[in-house]
Image (cartoon, rainbow, N blue to C red; front, side, top):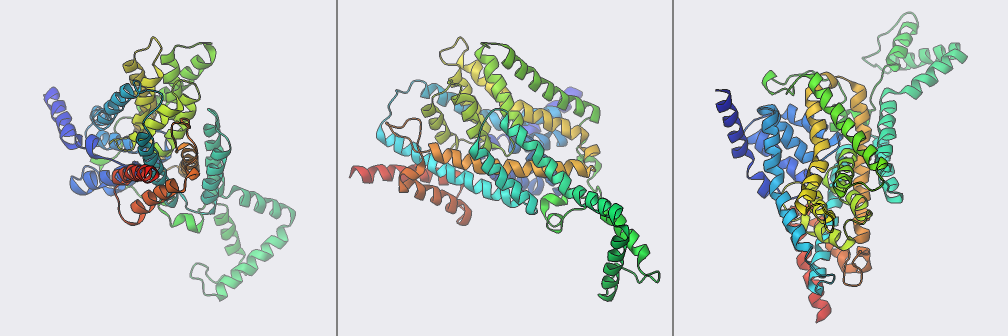
Length: 496
C-alpha cells in the first residue's frame, strides 16, 4: 500500500510538472508568476500565505530562486521525494539541451561566419536588456526604506569595482547586519541611554514637553495625565527602547514579513515537511560540504578537474543570491578566469541559454562539459558534476529551512538580517548588467567580447528588449529572439 501511495504521488507530481520544463521561458520573475497561477490559483496545492512565505525564503537564500520554489511547493504538498522528482522534471530538459549545445560548440572552429556573430551579439544585447529589467523589478520589491535603497546602490557599485571568489560572501554579512541594526534601532537606543546618563533632567523635561504637545494636538494614543506627563514619558521611553521598523518599511511587502503576524495557514499545508532537527542537519551538511570542497581546493596543488569543477560551482551556488541574472557573470569568473572555457565559448552559451526553458542555472551544465575537454574527465561527467554542484546548495538549504521555518518565522532578527542580504543581492544584479554589457559585442576580431556601446545599434537592441518587456508585455523569449533578428538586420544593412 505504501508503494502504491508513493507511486500515485510521483505520478501526480509528473502529471502536474512535466510541461514546465519545456515551456517556462524567461527568468525567475516570469517563473514565479507561472507558479502562482498554477499552484495557487488553478489547483490550490498551497494558499497565498504559504506562497508568500516561500517567495521570501527563496529570494533571501542562495541558489536558483524559481527552482527552489518549485521544489518546496511539491515537497509541501506531497513529500521531499516528490520535491526532488519535480526538480528533475523542471531542470533536466534544459540541462540536456545545454549539454548537447556544449558538444556542438566543442566542434566549432575558431572563427565563425559574420552573420553568426551578428545573431549572437543581438541575442546578448537583448539579454542585457532583460536582465536590466529583472534588476529593476527585484529592486522594486527589495527596497523598503532608505537603508535598503542605499544597500542596493552599494552592492551594485561594489560588484562593479571588484570581483573575487571571496568577495561576494564578505559583502553579504555587513548588509544583513546593517538592516538588523537599523530595524532594532540599536544606535538610537544607545544614544538615548547615554544622554539619560549625562543629562537625565533635561531628557525628562523634553519628554514632558513632547507629551503636552501631543495632548493638545488631540492624539488618541496619549491620554491626559494629571501627573504632568511623567508616567507617559516613562511609557514612551519603554516603547522607544523596543525594536521597531521604519514607516516606509512597515508598509512594504518585504517588511511585512518582519512582523509577527498570526499563523492562519491550515495544518495540512504548513511547511513542516520534517522535524527541525533534520532541517538543521541538512543546513549543517551543506555548510560542511562547502568547507570540505574549499579545503580540498586549497590543499591540493593540482586537484583533479572534477573536484575543481564541483568546488567552484558549489561555491557559486552557495553565495549567489538573486538567481540566474547574478550567476552568469560570477560563473565567468569561476570558469573562464580559470582557463577552462574560452571567453568566446562562454559568450556563445550565454547568448543561447536565454532561449532555453527552465532555470538559467543550467548554464553550469554547458560550462562543466566544456571544462572537461582535453582532460581525462568525460564531458558527460563534467556536466553532471557541474549540475550537482550548482543546484545542491540551494536545494539543501531550502529543504533544511522547511524543517525549521516554523520555529524561525517568529524571529524578527532573522528576517531583518535577510532583508539586507536580499537588498545586496539585488545590487549584484545591476553588477551583472554592467559586466555583461562590457563583453556582449563579439566578432571575429574580438572573440573575448567588447562593450555593446561600441556600436549604437546594440544599445537600441538592449533598449528594445527592456521596453518591449516592461511596457508592451513582450514575452522574454520573444524579446531575446527579436534581438537576434535585429542583429541579422544590422549585418544585412552593413553589407548592403
